Length: 252
Length: 329
Picture 1 (tube, rainbow over the protein chains, first blue to last red):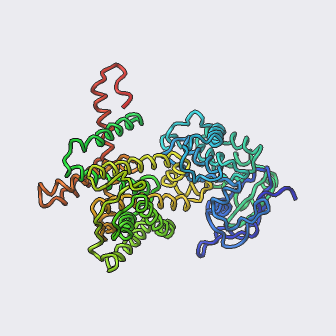
Picture 2: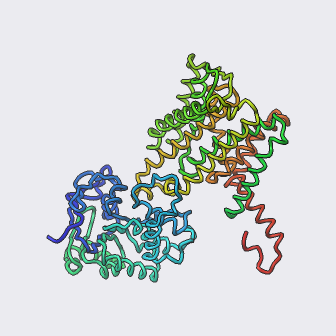
């Protein structure tokens, strides 16, 4: 088996009677872009929420770099090197672009329980902030208030904040959702650049984007893994055609 | 309003306050001293409401504990040394805030409001019913604190002017202390928690720790205000801790403008002056006071101090009739 960075073992999550994620066993390889696709309600976002610690699993285990992170709170998972971006833009709307990334970058210093010296003297944080802004393409918008930026820019900022925490593994929940085609292309380009030295787990509905950047695909339906494999394998899978891709084409 | 305009205004206000006792009668010096004390109390609550996003409805508990610590420890003392009494009050209030905060920060929103209120009421009723600590009569202090080195008096608070300057120094120190911590890494985290706590956690911060530290700092500062109030009036009673006090403090913070440190200071001036002078106009003064608070909240949702930048902008736009127009408002 190749170098596995993250593994889930019979992971389940139920909300009362509803089983949102059902017995999911998956291995994510280091350095790859692994996309998770599936119809609405398939449990993709719930799965990401389990991986990032936003939700506690009902059953099963999650291993990151061989360490069990199953019931760790989100801040500990973040500190271990797993960053995530949200489907619904989740930023500090009243802060400037720079301040948004600053808070993210500052999370990597030993402790922020520092009371005396002004934060702006922290050189390492300033560098990380600038770097994240440049990566996500918002260097020019540094001083703009987040709430005054376009939706697409806010989505970029969402990714920039994640990058400012310098994660090893990125969990991206629909980074292209609601974006115009120009903005989409920019973000796809960004994801491609990030893929060079990060591992990406990506939920996305834009199939062209998924097929163009993913190395591996997992198809989820009704909380279960229907199929997982390379892009070619999934494209040619009978089960996937019937359960998902076919349906979508009918709908169009 | 640029930070330069703001700092200049604050500096001029400070100069005016320093000079005030030279002209004001002792009644007014005492009244402004009381305003300083209320301002410190409101400033401390602003750290919670305006910067951390914690709407505490029990903040008067720490104000009261600061006062009671002084009164209980020194009611029979012939000399109250500031260097003993002040740290004791701060420590007692800080410790109480640690306990209340440790329990309450796990909740948020309405539950946080309720739990802080309930805990403050527990303190209130404890002191209200304790015959040891004077019950509802409270405790009287017959001497004012002094600062001595050896047998030399450095500062005696039994002169109204001395007390005035001491309270002013405490207010300025408290203000500068909060400015400092808000600029520091700690301040960046708590303001982010107020904006979006969930995201702060996802970015790798254990947010409860930061909220708790903020709560303890605010409680300690409220204890300073309680210490001053006890020393100033010479008696401490359970009404220091009543939920009215907590409510008035919230009103001051909102009225002045939360999330600006100077706002609560201005709010303290407005409320205390109104409380003093409205009763001379009408018996229904509380009705009038309520109306003023409602008007400010409706028309100036960012507080009374949000008027200042508007006034400045207004005069600038009148002054300048250059072709570029008032672009710097």
